[in-house]
Image 1: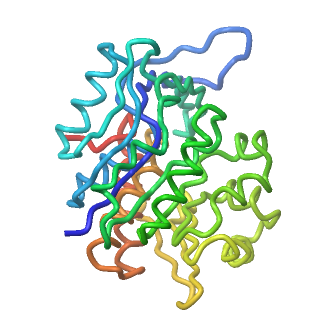
Image 2: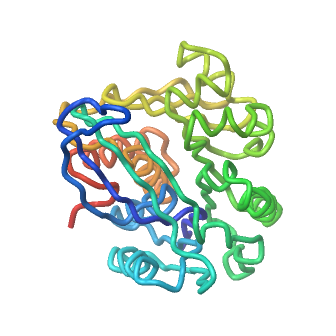
Length: 295
């Protein structure tokens, strides 16, 4: 059976849901909670939750946060291949959620810097398997080489591949052309509208998607409350609308989409089925606090 291999960040999210607009250098009342997170780990959780045989590769500290991060994944059926260190702590992220449900994130990579190409082991390089990498792995200097080498190793072995660009602002910090070069040659990329705009300079998403076909065979853009769209080199443009839901927390919506999409695509290889599954997972995710499936 084909397996989904997801590589990248696993974090602990400290979420602050504020009831007013954030007051810089002052106070904003809110509710603070802690959840498992990390873009790649979130996608793995959603993929496993929706039925895909999923393997996650990432780094954690030898600490309580790391142990709870591993347990949160294994409880959902994810096969974890984690690098554990007692010299660096598990990554963490502060997520500030405003009254509209939109989120602002402050990540600390922590043990995610441990990743290297050797962690994609030969037993995973089987025909039919698919490798997905979180863009944060490219966007953080300490894991960038690992991401580049892991993607190259997977391609050389004949695996299909995908990348989620992950962060508009961090793409700009890393250098737009550099990021384009790093993620080029994949089967699928999963930008949101901001990431598609910064990667192409286009504000029209159809034009942006078609421009990104230089980098990938399939471009899947998440459109927030409007759903998602896909353009492919060999298929007509597809769009799927999102159901109307009350958005509580947008944290992890794109991760959930990627996980849901890839789980369906791995099983069916049908773009419309995958797009619909991705929208369903993203819509489910925004209805509760935190970036993982609600059990």
